[in-house]
Length: 408
Figure (cartoon, rainbow, N blue to C red):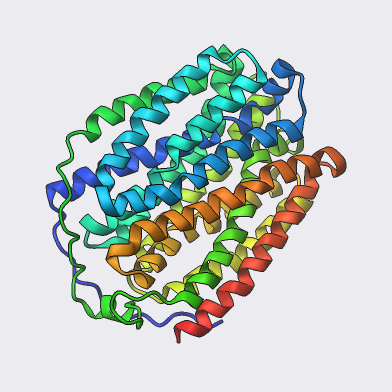
């Protein structure tokens, strides 16, 4: 694969106060949604004891959360187009915050599973609403999607250490409640956003024209979108399988002794260290997609991610930590690229729907691998999960090759 040729520089503009406020709300909200998503996996050793259960059933709870997380994004995308994305962001913040706080009352495995499903349903409106909000209000979309993605990566990275630390110190319900209170606080701040009117036009720079889609105005490139969504599904399967069991896998395969921490805290801390590099990947790709061919950036990230997941499957200790850091860097770099590609392929009046469909495929269908991976881990061990997830990466690579060829 050749190195993308750099196009002319984009036209820079001064970010106005409303754009800053939109980015402030969406970045804070994005970090929170991934705290909600990531709160359970670090608690798996505690939950196995608390509910006398196993990897499969806890993986099933993650799947319930994630199916609700994904399924709700379809109607949320339509509502973002019709009612406006700001209202949906606010409703997500209030609803998910309250659902997380109510987990304090969960005294059975069934009640916990139901409340996690409700939490996932409220969270489902966030991604289609926020991506539409950014696409409609911020001119330099690549950089904005990158900053938005960095906040999500920070949430993903902090979830293991915060959840494990609070769970080990004060019980497994504590991180749920704390994250819920934070969400309610951000919800009140989101009320200060003005009502969003018509979408802003992107700067008419040479680079913008270079990355524009040749499809007729208002039309959809159906074949290209179909291939894109197959790649997103494969990436979603890999993400959910890895993220559900990464803290536990780290706790069992990274052998360090520090301040008397137990395997739960160590697994959460090491997973956080590895995942922090995802923020760097978000930043780099967010800057690159405004300047280079995004399909090639997407292909490069998926191809190298395949290699790093395979390395995670065969390594321990320092090599495992380093390979997981490189995995996180390249995996999370795909997210701004995917969002940019959808804004490139999709007319403005259909972006909420398409972002909702994207999120449903990535996190809804992709969540199947949480329960399947738990079953695989019970039968073959945790290491087998990473071989299977490398296969998902390899499948996504094939679809990305098609997108590069079709992009010219």
